[in-house]
Length: 163
Image 1 (cartoon, helix red, strand yellow):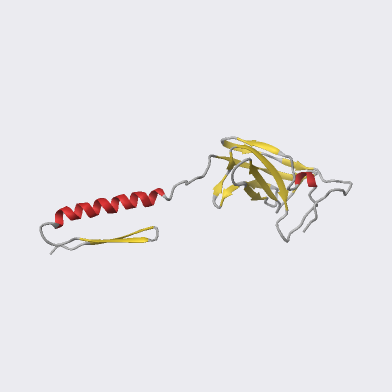
Image 2 (cartoon, rainbow, N blue to C red; image 1 turned 45 degrees about the vertical axis):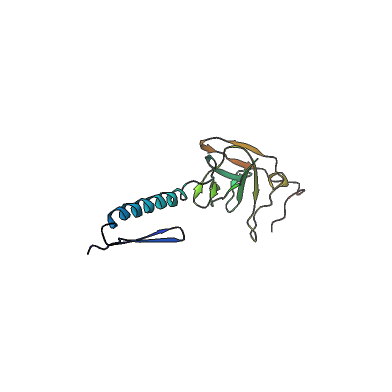
């Protein structure tokens, strides 16, 4: 007696197929194989890009008064869609991430602002670079390099608190 079993996990569903015995088993085997193949194909389609928009890679360096700023968050917020963000390295360099492990930012105009992570601080960020920033940059497909040399507010006015 020829018996086989196939267990396949698709998402949260486990498919278990076994070969029926008897003369009708031959046709059912191909039907089960076709069903399994179709379910696997639909399951794999869910592992794709989903609703991710076209992205452009964005890297650069952030300095304040010519000095690299490490640990600073830079955010690119598009007119429509989710923002991309990065935290600068100690040398002031950054690479934007659209989502965890997905580099880039939405194509088109993006408002740019800077902030310190919660509970951390550094040189005060002038409000013109904070959440109400009017800085706008155009992200295009391919690689984009945007370097920022922020100017501190030497008068001490209108600076964001340093958490």
